[in-house]
Image (cartoon, rainbow, N blue to C red; front, side, top):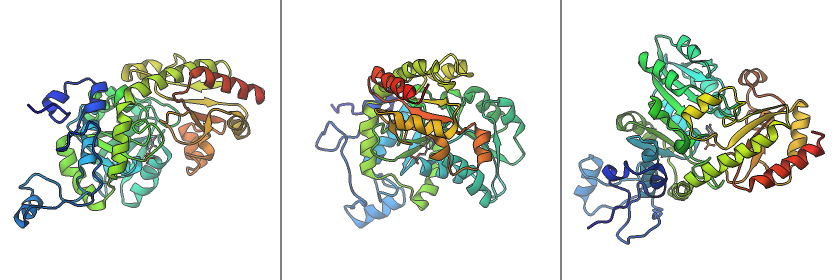
Length: 402
Ligand SMILES: *Cc1c(COP(=O)(O)O)cnc(C)c1O
């Protein structure tokens, strides 16, 4: 009898997420390897010319070219789809390749998109700069307010696009309310779920149609490779997304897919421990800095909503100092354990000053609209002992007189 490896969806879809993260989508080769095989191949050979023709005609199962299919990438796609509780997924080279593809494959000249104001800097560039160049209109709303989403709908609106929690202000969008507004108006909702991952939050359970990821962040989780993914219905992935990515080529390399497969094996453990650490660090910092935002803390203005949608607060917190950029940079420079780095989702604690790094490409007006202030810092809490992190912050804060 064939052992169950993670390919039979009637079995694997019943597994709990931690099991899917380790085994979902695994396709063993004839060698029976335990760890997923890495298929570094750009092409595939056929037994005869008729087989090649049949495969191109879609009459025969099998792969034709690694821009379209690769066994290692496919294992990752199936694993991510299972974790999301979705029918299908496609991986891409980076999170931004995924965001670009998911928007451009659905929008045409004359269409209108509504997007949340707090967003990853490059996502704002897509909505504010790239899409308008192709005659696609964008309205930016305060994502926290469901009425604002409703009021922004026009006859030509096609999509709602947002992050929750959002980068870097940790705004929470009410998934159930906003997805219901979209459904009632016949629109699709695309959620960038990089901060929470499917282990903490599954937007499709609340009515989202499509979920997009930077897998660079928590999914790899160890700061090694860039990757992205788009998750949705079989119909959407096959009929709308696939021809776009087949012909534009934002393909994920097999090696990077393999690294992310290894990352997913520990995602459940990492995100829970990092969320515990983030809560401990947030509790310590709350009394020491003028303002701090962490969805897992009671003081977050949308704490209750966050905890309804997410099973933990996540790894990211933002804090605000009164002394502007000078004081924010001084705190960064005073830290010894926490690295100055703009990445997130890493197992190392990393802190950045969004105004002068991740969000420096945006105009001061857009930054102000998003709540990205000069005194703001964003912290990704890693897997270190939380007491060592607290001691590093305690010492650094003392050094800058706080
Ligand atoms: C990092 C990030 C992206 C972009 O992902 P890359 O893998 O860096 O291209 C998009 N959205 C959010 C919320 C992110 O944090």
